Image 1: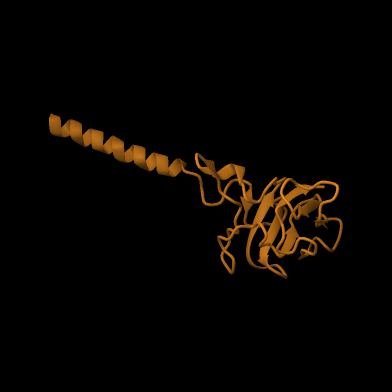
Image 2 (image 1 turned 60 degrees about the vertical axis):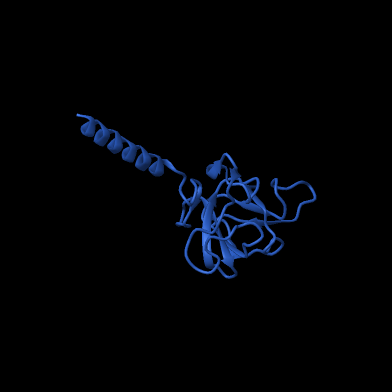
Length: 151
């Protein structure tokens, strides 16, 4: 009977370990996408002309260094480029060179965290449904980008 109890206890321990691993935060947090057309994201690319690794970031981001969907007791992980290619796994902040707006709204990308102030340097990226410039290279924030918001 004692062996059976130990076996059941061991089985529960294995199930608990597997269950907690399944609940761990994924490498790419909710709000990050692979840049699907019309998914509502601002797709940022590691290299110019929409090449290299990329990630689609949905919504307003106060600071690319702090992904609120990947926080734990020691802090937050940064937003990173999640697709394969040059720059895969790198932090978005100060590394994005080009973009595609996959949303129906306009995005602003800012030089500094906090989504800007009246004196901020930023790029305005129009909706894919409004202008033919919904994709291109970042100008004012080329490799100097820290936050984004719908504007």
